[in-house]
Length: 344
Image (cartoon, rainbow, N blue to C red; front, side, top):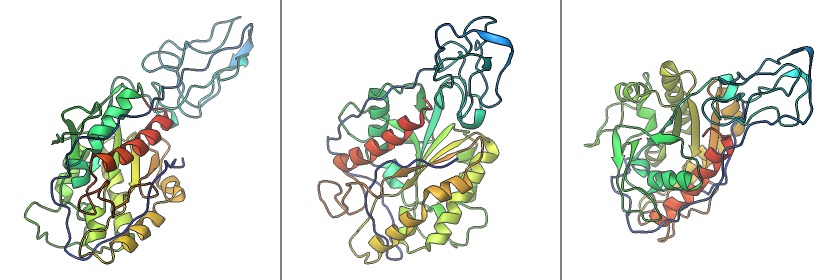
């Protein structure tokens, strides 16, 4: 299935040897976000009687409790989270017994895309480098999801983001953000060579550990250090595919939201803007569709084509790491993409 794209911003790239250090700016700021409720399930039309021998169309699976009454209206009770007659994306309510308009529920009530059933709380892993580990981006994303009444989730990971973000953000959230790491160090067959950074660069063994957490959803904003180091766009894109494949080994139903990363323009990196523009141009809906599976779709989150400005001191203090105001721009775009998908 195709990747959906939220609005985003413009970008740059790196001179060799650059790295994202720890510590995004943590001044107060960043507004909480938009509302947006999960879609309710398909309702039945009044008086639609089920025909003799009416059959149920193949597609998304019904959640527990979704029944078709004989001689009455078809479909389960509202397609909400948890138990209830919810169909997966593309699944339709029974035909033969007449149903009203909207007999199919939105994606992600209790059934994920492609008919992969999900029950309970959704585990969401923010994955990336220091923009994920050391800025307000994960905390403000969490706050906006909660404010928008998308509450059936928890952030997971072995790291903790604990910036002072304001705007209703929690004091800390879990994530898998690692300052200085490059996504191209993670594949099993990585050609990046030995890491020379004291804080580490990332490894296949670490990728395996993260995948073993088996998150339901991964919010991946990764590649800033690779762009900064001048790594070829094709190598970064191959690494994205390898990361997704590793998570699918542990959870074939994992859902990925892959970011077109924010622009970067750090001091001394004359090629950063051009390199990040090239990466953004490669992260397309066609790429997302080609690399999606029936149960593990890829969505795009367009942070690149956003109002985030790497030359503005309002958005970033160093041309790379967003301030709370810059992180609010990122969080709002991520919120829009996740809310539109309808998973929780």
